Length: 181
Image (cartoon, rainbow, N blue to C red; front, side):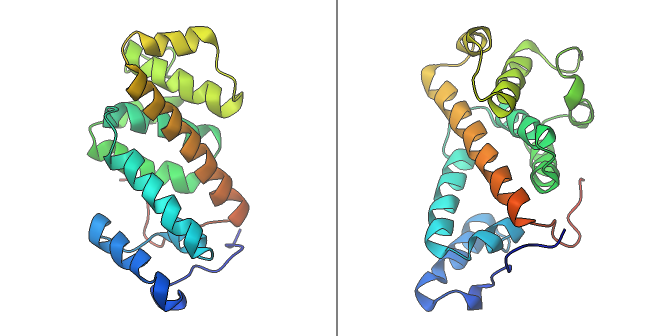
């Protein structure tokens, strides 16, 4: 499916909003991707979207590997190829093993995952598929995460569930050359 809205470029933005793309390049060292360029159809929302995304990625105390395993769970369960591909690569960069990524669907029974990883992925799975999370699943998080990190996990899973609900309805496509490393 082709994108349902145009991918906005920096020059397409009103002059007062071009700083959004400039700041993106400065902070991430790359041009905005298709998701950002699609959301740029509403520059005021892109500004806030990026602020929250950057804080969730760079401003939390949640272990990056746990975060990425949770986000990969969201991407897998929602069949969001864009999210799954981009976060596959981010996962590798933060230390998730390729073998783990190849066995995400078997996380409950695979010896490749430890109990903390399983608990986070179970949380992401329940929050994505049911929204309601069982007491047992939530209490498992309490065994190794403090309230701050639990909240950061909840916010990450919630945010990326909203991201897939932008990606899929807008038909956001992978960028040319984007692939799992």
